Amino acid sequence: MQTNLYYRQGNSDKVYQASIEPKADGHIVTFAYGRRGQTLTTGTKTQTPVSLEKAQSIHAKLVASKLAKGYTPAEDGTPYQQTGNEGRDSGIRCQLLNPVDEDQLPRLITGTTHCLQQKHDGRRLMVRKQGDEIIGINRRGLIVAIPDTIREAIEYIPFDVLIDGEAVGDTLHAFDLLEVKGNDLRQRRYIDRFSGLIMVIPPNLPALCWIATPLDPDDKRATYEELLAEGAEGVVFKDINAPYTPGRPNSGGPQLKFKFVESASFIVAGRNGTKRSVGLELVTAEGNRVPAGNVTIPANHEVPEKGEVIEARYMYAFRESGAIYQPVYLGARDDIPAEDCTVEQLKFKAEPAASMLD
Figure 1 (cartoon, rainbow, N blue to C red):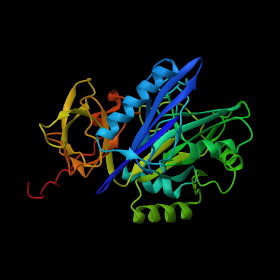
Figure 2 (tube, one colour):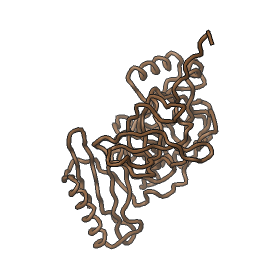
Figure 3 (cartoon, rainbow, N blue to C red):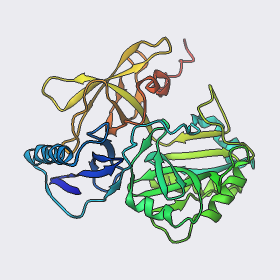
Figure 4 (cartoon, rainbow, N blue to C red):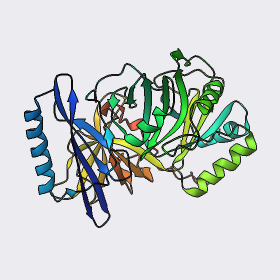
Protein backbone atom coordinates (compact mmCIF):
# COMPACT_ATOMS: atom_id res chain seq x y z
CA MET A 1 0.00 0.00 0.00
CA GLN A 2 1.42 3.39 -0.98
CA THR A 3 -0.01 6.91 -0.73
CA ASN A 4 1.45 9.64 -2.94
CA LEU A 5 0.94 13.25 -1.88
CA TYR A 6 2.16 16.47 -3.37
CA TYR A 7 2.34 20.13 -2.45
CA ARG A 8 2.56 22.71 -5.21
CA GLN A 9 2.47 26.45 -4.58
CA GLY A 10 4.51 29.08 -6.41
CA ASN A 11 8.01 27.64 -6.89
CA SER A 12 7.35 24.87 -4.40
CA ASP A 13 6.82 21.39 -5.86
CA LYS A 14 7.25 18.75 -3.18
CA VAL A 15 6.47 15.03 -3.04
CA TYR A 16 5.66 12.89 0.01
CA GLN A 17 5.17 9.14 -0.14
CA ALA A 18 4.01 6.91 2.71
CA SER A 19 4.00 3.13 2.25
CA ILE A 20 3.11 -0.06 4.09
CA GLU A 21 5.54 -2.84 3.17
CA PRO A 22 5.53 -6.51 4.25
CA LYS A 23 8.54 -7.38 6.39
CA ALA A 24 9.27 -10.73 8.05
CA ASP A 25 6.06 -11.73 9.88
CA GLY A 26 4.63 -8.22 9.96
CA HIS A 27 4.67 -4.85 8.22
CA ILE A 28 6.69 -1.63 8.26
CA VAL A 29 5.73 1.96 7.43
CA THR A 30 8.23 3.82 5.25
CA PHE A 31 8.33 7.32 3.81
CA ALA A 32 10.14 9.38 1.15
CA TYR A 33 9.98 13.13 0.69
CA GLY A 34 11.62 16.04 -1.10
CA ARG A 35 11.44 18.22 -4.19
CA ARG A 36 9.94 16.51 -7.23
CA GLY A 37 12.57 15.35 -9.71
CA GLN A 38 15.35 15.21 -7.11
CA THR A 39 16.66 12.34 -5.01
CA LEU A 40 14.26 11.98 -2.07
CA THR A 41 15.08 11.66 1.61
CA THR A 42 13.83 8.34 2.98
CA GLY A 43 13.18 6.72 6.32
CA THR A 44 10.92 4.43 8.32
CA LYS A 45 8.32 5.06 11.02
CA THR A 46 8.64 1.53 12.40
CA GLN A 47 12.00 0.26 13.61
CA THR A 48 10.69 -3.30 13.76
CA PRO A 49 7.79 -5.03 11.97
CA VAL A 50 4.33 -4.46 13.44
CA SER A 51 0.90 -5.93 12.78
CA LEU A 52 -1.00 -4.84 9.70
CA GLU A 53 -3.59 -3.09 11.87
CA LYS A 54 -0.87 -1.12 13.68
CA ALA A 55 0.89 -0.26 10.40
CA GLN A 56 -2.39 0.99 8.92
CA SER A 57 -2.95 3.20 11.95
CA ILE A 58 0.55 4.69 11.72
CA HIS A 59 0.16 5.18 7.97
CA ALA A 60 -3.22 6.91 8.38
CA LYS A 61 -1.89 9.33 11.01
CA LEU A 62 1.14 10.10 8.83
CA VAL A 63 -1.01 10.86 5.79
CA ALA A 64 -3.45 12.93 7.87
CA SER A 65 -0.61 15.07 9.22
CA LYS A 66 0.56 15.88 5.69
CA LEU A 67 -2.94 16.63 4.43
CA ALA A 68 -3.29 19.09 7.31
CA LYS A 69 -0.18 20.89 6.03
CA GLY A 70 -1.67 21.40 2.56
CA TYR A 71 -0.57 18.24 0.72
CA THR A 72 -3.11 16.65 -1.62
CA PRO A 73 -3.30 13.15 -3.16
CA ALA A 74 -1.44 12.59 -6.44
CA GLU A 75 -0.64 9.67 -8.69
CA ASP A 76 2.38 11.08 -10.50
CA GLY A 77 5.00 10.99 -7.76
CA THR A 78 8.18 9.02 -8.45
CA PRO A 79 7.91 5.83 -6.34
CA TYR A 80 10.86 4.79 -4.16
CA GLN A 81 11.45 1.14 -3.43
CA GLN A 82 12.37 0.47 0.21
CA THR A 83 13.47 -2.70 1.97
CA GLY A 84 12.99 -1.82 5.64
CA ASN A 85 16.78 -1.98 6.12
CA GLU A 86 17.19 1.75 5.51
CA GLY A 87 19.67 3.30 7.93
CA ARG A 88 21.55 0.05 8.62
CA ASP A 89 25.30 -0.22 8.04
CA SER A 90 26.06 -2.04 4.79
CA GLY A 91 29.71 -2.64 5.69
CA ILE A 92 30.71 -0.95 2.42
CA ARG A 93 32.64 2.32 2.33
CA CYS A 94 33.12 4.62 -0.64
CA GLN A 95 36.24 6.48 -1.72
CA LEU A 96 36.06 10.19 -0.87
CA LEU A 97 37.85 12.99 -2.69
CA ASN A 98 40.03 15.88 -1.52
CA PRO A 99 39.88 19.30 -3.20
CA VAL A 100 42.71 20.48 -5.43
CA ASP A 101 43.97 24.05 -5.76
CA GLU A 102 43.57 25.93 -9.03
CA ASP A 103 47.35 26.07 -9.56
CA GLN A 104 47.35 22.26 -9.94
CA LEU A 105 44.87 22.27 -12.83
CA PRO A 106 47.42 22.69 -15.67
CA ARG A 107 49.31 19.58 -14.54
CA LEU A 108 46.15 17.50 -14.24
CA ILE A 109 44.66 18.67 -17.54
CA THR A 110 47.79 18.45 -19.71
CA GLY A 111 49.14 15.25 -18.17
CA THR A 112 48.17 11.71 -19.13
CA THR A 113 48.05 10.12 -15.65
CA HIS A 114 44.59 11.47 -14.78
CA CYS A 115 41.24 11.35 -16.55
CA LEU A 116 38.60 14.04 -16.14
CA GLN A 117 34.90 13.71 -15.25
CA GLN A 118 32.08 16.11 -14.52
CA LYS A 119 31.31 16.59 -10.83
CA HIS A 120 27.53 16.25 -10.71
CA ASP A 121 25.48 18.19 -8.19
CA GLY A 122 23.66 15.24 -6.64
CA ARG A 123 24.12 12.65 -3.93
CA ARG A 124 26.69 9.88 -3.76
CA LEU A 125 25.04 6.52 -4.28
CA MET A 126 26.40 3.00 -4.60
CA VAL A 127 24.02 0.30 -5.81
CA ARG A 128 24.59 -3.40 -5.15
CA LYS A 129 22.75 -6.21 -6.91
CA GLN A 130 23.01 -9.66 -5.31
CA GLY A 131 20.61 -12.15 -6.80
CA ASP A 132 17.14 -10.64 -6.61
CA GLU A 133 18.12 -8.09 -3.94
CA ILE A 134 19.06 -4.55 -4.95
CA ILE A 135 20.07 -1.99 -2.31
CA GLY A 136 21.33 1.58 -2.32
CA ILE A 137 24.27 2.66 -0.14
CA ASN A 138 25.09 6.29 0.68
CA ARG A 139 28.48 7.94 1.26
CA ARG A 140 28.37 6.93 4.94
CA GLY A 141 27.88 3.26 4.09
CA LEU A 142 24.25 3.22 5.21
CA ILE A 143 21.52 1.41 3.28
CA VAL A 144 19.13 3.86 1.62
CA ALA A 145 16.07 3.55 -0.59
CA ILE A 146 16.51 4.20 -4.31
CA PRO A 147 14.09 5.39 -7.00
CA ASP A 148 12.27 2.63 -8.86
CA THR A 149 13.70 3.99 -12.11
CA ILE A 150 17.26 3.21 -10.96
CA ARG A 151 16.23 -0.13 -9.50
CA GLU A 152 14.55 -1.18 -12.74
CA ALA A 153 17.62 -0.15 -14.73
CA ILE A 154 19.91 -2.22 -12.49
CA GLU A 155 17.62 -5.21 -12.99
CA TYR A 156 18.63 -5.24 -16.67
CA ILE A 157 22.13 -6.31 -15.58
CA PRO A 158 21.93 -10.13 -15.54
CA PHE A 159 24.56 -10.73 -12.82
CA ASP A 160 25.69 -9.41 -9.42
CA VAL A 161 27.38 -5.98 -9.41
CA LEU A 162 28.38 -3.14 -7.11
CA ILE A 163 28.35 0.22 -8.92
CA ASP A 164 29.47 3.58 -7.55
CA GLY A 165 28.01 6.84 -8.84
CA GLU A 166 26.14 10.07 -8.22
CA ALA A 167 22.34 10.17 -8.12
CA VAL A 168 20.76 13.25 -9.68
CA GLY A 169 16.99 13.03 -9.49
CA ASP A 170 16.00 9.63 -10.84
CA THR A 171 19.25 8.97 -12.72
CA LEU A 172 22.43 7.29 -11.49
CA HIS A 173 25.52 8.75 -13.18
CA ALA A 174 27.90 5.80 -12.71
CA PHE A 175 31.67 6.23 -12.55
CA ASP A 176 33.09 3.06 -10.96
CA LEU A 177 32.61 -0.71 -10.89
CA LEU A 178 33.73 -2.30 -7.61
CA GLU A 179 32.33 -5.83 -7.86
CA VAL A 180 31.09 -7.99 -10.71
CA LYS A 181 29.93 -11.62 -10.69
CA GLY A 182 31.27 -12.03 -7.14
CA ASN A 183 34.73 -10.70 -8.03
CA ASP A 184 36.20 -7.75 -6.09
CA LEU A 185 37.73 -5.24 -8.52
CA ARG A 186 38.92 -2.64 -5.99
CA GLN A 187 42.61 -3.45 -6.39
CA ARG A 188 42.53 -3.16 -10.17
CA ARG A 189 43.48 0.03 -12.01
CA TYR A 190 40.77 2.64 -12.29
CA ILE A 191 40.94 2.64 -16.10
CA ASP A 192 40.26 -1.11 -16.07
CA ARG A 193 37.36 -0.79 -13.65
CA PHE A 194 35.83 1.99 -15.73
CA SER A 195 36.24 -0.04 -18.93
CA GLY A 196 34.35 -2.86 -17.21
CA LEU A 197 31.64 -0.43 -16.16
CA ILE A 198 31.03 0.60 -19.77
CA MET A 199 30.63 -3.05 -20.74
CA VAL A 200 28.30 -3.83 -17.82
CA ILE A 201 25.78 -1.00 -18.23
CA PRO A 202 23.17 -1.79 -20.90
CA PRO A 203 22.70 0.90 -23.56
CA ASN A 204 19.80 3.34 -23.76
CA LEU A 205 18.83 3.36 -20.10
CA PRO A 206 17.91 6.94 -19.10
CA ALA A 207 18.10 6.10 -15.38
CA LEU A 208 21.58 4.51 -15.55
CA CYS A 209 24.48 5.87 -17.56
CA TRP A 210 28.26 6.04 -17.29
CA ILE A 211 30.00 9.41 -17.04
CA ALA A 212 31.97 10.73 -20.02
CA THR A 213 35.65 10.36 -19.12
CA PRO A 214 38.21 11.99 -21.46
CA LEU A 215 41.90 11.12 -21.02
CA ASP A 216 43.54 12.93 -23.95
CA PRO A 217 44.79 16.39 -22.80
CA ASP A 218 43.02 18.19 -25.65
CA ASP A 219 39.75 16.43 -24.87
CA LYS A 220 40.14 17.18 -21.16
CA ARG A 221 40.77 20.85 -21.84
CA ALA A 222 37.75 21.09 -24.16
CA THR A 223 35.50 19.29 -21.63
CA TYR A 224 36.74 21.49 -18.79
CA GLU A 225 36.00 24.69 -20.71
CA GLU A 226 32.59 23.38 -21.80
CA LEU A 227 31.57 22.47 -18.24
CA LEU A 228 32.82 25.80 -16.93
CA ALA A 229 30.76 27.67 -19.54
CA GLU A 230 27.67 25.58 -18.74
CA GLY A 231 27.85 26.49 -15.06
CA ALA A 232 28.52 22.93 -13.88
CA GLU A 233 29.45 22.32 -10.25
CA GLY A 234 33.00 21.29 -11.08
CA VAL A 235 35.28 18.51 -12.29
CA VAL A 236 36.95 15.41 -10.88
CA PHE A 237 40.41 14.09 -11.76
CA LYS A 238 41.17 10.39 -11.26
CA ASP A 239 44.51 8.59 -11.43
CA ILE A 240 43.90 5.94 -14.09
CA ASN A 241 46.38 3.50 -12.48
CA ALA A 242 45.10 3.75 -8.90
CA PRO A 243 43.10 1.11 -6.99
CA TYR A 244 39.89 1.94 -5.16
CA THR A 245 40.75 2.94 -1.59
CA PRO A 246 37.77 3.52 0.75
CA GLY A 247 37.81 6.62 2.94
CA ARG A 248 39.41 10.02 2.50
CA PRO A 249 43.21 10.56 2.51
CA ASN A 250 44.57 13.15 4.93
CA SER A 251 45.63 15.15 1.87
CA GLY A 252 45.93 14.67 -1.88
CA GLY A 253 45.08 11.21 -3.10
CA PRO A 254 44.42 9.50 -6.45
CA GLN A 255 41.00 11.16 -6.89
CA LEU A 256 40.71 14.95 -6.69
CA LYS A 257 37.89 17.46 -7.15
CA PHE A 258 37.83 21.08 -8.27
CA LYS A 259 34.65 23.11 -7.82
CA PHE A 260 33.69 25.98 -10.10
CA VAL A 261 31.35 27.23 -7.35
CA GLU A 262 31.97 27.09 -3.61
CA SER A 263 29.75 24.97 -1.38
CA ALA A 264 30.12 23.32 2.00
CA SER A 265 28.23 21.31 4.59
CA PHE A 266 27.16 23.10 7.79
CA ILE A 267 25.56 22.20 11.12
CA VAL A 268 22.35 24.07 11.89
CA ALA A 269 22.90 26.09 15.08
CA GLY A 270 19.21 26.93 15.40
CA ARG A 271 16.43 29.00 13.91
CA ASN A 272 16.78 32.79 13.98
CA GLY A 273 13.58 33.73 15.84
CA THR A 274 10.51 33.46 13.64
CA LYS A 275 12.44 34.14 10.44
CA ARG A 276 12.97 31.56 7.71
CA SER A 277 16.70 31.56 8.39
CA VAL A 278 19.04 29.45 10.50
CA GLY A 279 22.42 29.99 12.06
CA LEU A 280 25.31 27.88 10.80
CA GLU A 281 28.22 26.24 12.61
CA LEU A 282 31.41 24.45 11.63
CA VAL A 283 33.83 22.21 13.53
CA THR A 284 37.44 23.30 14.16
CA ALA A 285 40.47 21.00 14.12
CA GLU A 286 40.22 20.93 17.93
CA GLY A 287 36.63 19.70 17.76
CA ASN A 288 35.00 22.97 18.81
CA ARG A 289 31.99 24.44 17.03
CA VAL A 290 32.28 27.99 15.70
CA PRO A 291 29.68 30.22 13.98
CA ALA A 292 29.74 30.44 10.17
CA GLY A 293 26.96 32.94 9.47
CA ASN A 294 23.31 32.46 8.54
CA VAL A 295 21.34 31.24 5.55
CA THR A 296 17.74 31.88 4.48
CA ILE A 297 15.57 28.81 3.84
CA PRO A 298 13.44 29.13 0.66
CA ALA A 299 9.67 28.79 1.01
CA ASN A 300 9.67 25.50 -0.92
CA HIS A 301 11.88 23.86 1.74
CA GLU A 302 11.13 22.92 5.33
CA VAL A 303 13.21 24.83 7.90
CA PRO A 304 15.81 22.36 9.22
CA GLU A 305 16.07 21.62 12.93
CA LYS A 306 18.99 22.42 15.23
CA GLY A 307 21.79 19.88 14.84
CA GLU A 308 20.84 18.83 11.30
CA VAL A 309 23.38 19.07 8.48
CA ILE A 310 22.65 21.19 5.42
CA GLU A 311 24.48 22.18 2.22
CA ALA A 312 24.94 25.82 1.18
CA ARG A 313 26.60 27.57 -1.74
CA TYR A 314 28.54 30.78 -1.11
CA MET A 315 31.03 33.17 -2.72
CA TYR A 316 33.71 33.11 -0.03
CA ALA A 317 34.17 33.21 3.74
CA PHE A 318 35.50 36.12 5.79
CA ARG A 319 38.70 35.10 7.54
CA GLU A 320 38.07 37.36 10.55
CA SER A 321 34.58 36.09 11.41
CA GLY A 322 34.39 32.79 9.55
CA ALA A 323 30.99 33.80 8.15
CA ILE A 324 30.12 32.93 4.55
CA TYR A 325 29.18 35.65 2.05
CA GLN A 326 26.01 35.46 -0.07
CA PRO A 327 24.95 31.98 1.07
CA VAL A 328 22.33 30.01 -0.87
CA TYR A 329 20.56 27.06 0.75
CA LEU A 330 20.87 23.87 -1.31
CA GLY A 331 19.13 21.34 0.90
CA ALA A 332 19.42 18.91 3.80
CA ARG A 333 22.32 16.41 3.89
CA ASP A 334 21.38 13.46 6.05
CA ASP A 335 24.21 11.50 4.40
CA ILE A 336 26.94 13.70 5.93
CA PRO A 337 27.83 13.42 9.66
CA ALA A 338 28.24 16.58 11.73
CA GLU A 339 31.92 15.86 12.36
CA ASP A 340 32.60 16.25 8.62
CA CYS A 341 31.34 19.86 8.69
CA THR A 342 34.80 21.30 9.23
CA VAL A 343 36.25 24.79 8.87
CA GLU A 344 38.76 23.30 6.41
CA GLN A 345 35.97 23.17 3.80
CA LEU A 346 35.85 26.95 3.49
CA LYS A 347 37.43 29.11 0.84
CA PHE A 348 38.34 32.44 2.39
CA LYS A 349 38.30 35.85 0.77
CA ALA A 350 41.65 36.61 -0.84
CA GLU A 351 43.81 39.04 1.09
CA PRO A 352 44.58 42.32 -0.72
CA ALA A 353 48.06 42.46 -2.17
CA ALA A 354 50.55 44.50 -0.12
CA SER A 355 51.40 47.91 -1.48
CA MET A 356 54.83 48.34 -3.01
CA LEU A 357 55.17 51.48 -0.90
CA ASP A 358 54.64 49.70 2.45
